[in-house]
Image 1 (cartoon, rainbow, N blue to C red):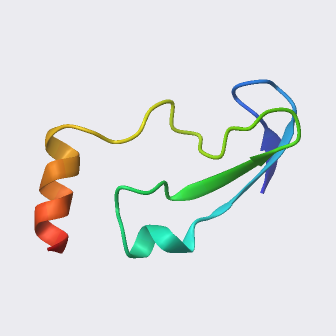
Image 2 (image 1 turned 90 degrees about the vertical axis):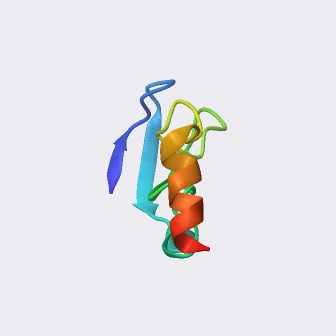
Length: 59
């Protein structure tokens, strides 16, 4: 999907992240931006109770 980068407002592509199926802590989508080096639409990585709960469920 083509979109505008939420960080630098340059043209960007959003695509599914196949690695997310194996590790839920990884982003669902990958961002490929022509104007900056962001690779995720997440502002920060998943942390805290949700991340530790997801890790214990998949283990």
